[in-house]
Image (cartoon, rainbow, N blue to C red; front, side, top):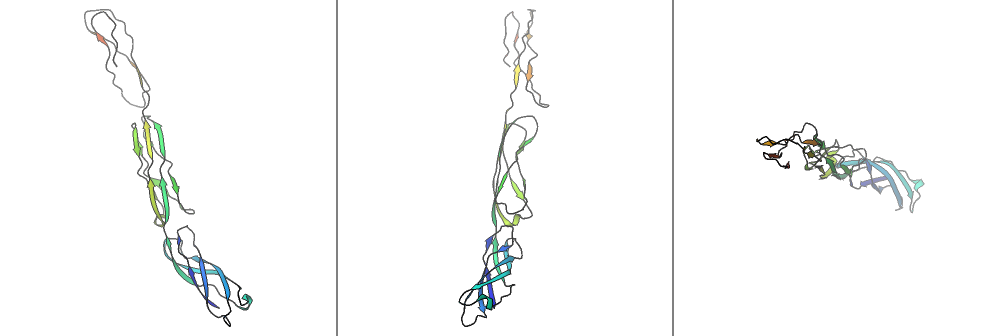
Length: 212
């Protein structure tokens, strides 16, 4: 028998598996019929027009007996492998200011095929309290096989608590202006420098309150 083969196009799945359909073109006796099934593989798993080759064929009885016939493999056909969809979704990370640079992380990839490996970059990185948005990018040796879309995440740096406690200073009237001082700062981080103003100042005998 001789037979032709067609294969269906598919979306990239990182495999060379093809889905063939076989048609007997000649060799049947007296218009007998048989059924052909089999397997085929593409020469490459990558996106584009690829050639598939039949790897196995199997004949089943129709109006004729399959045992009366033989069919070799090796039929070829072309089909198109189209790009798969990959979505990179950033995380929302909440942290508290610590005077050091902090970065978002943990993006998830949906639609990655097989053992393809992607490197994600563009995570938001910052030091000061604010909300920062990722500018994500995913790279891979297999990138050309994907339509990649991005949902950027955020790094939210919340303000750290800082307490400034004024001192209670007792002095005796001396006819000159006198000023409180020596507030303590609790919660200062890293090398941050905090300038304190608003100390109480007065000349006459009384109690004066800081407005720090």
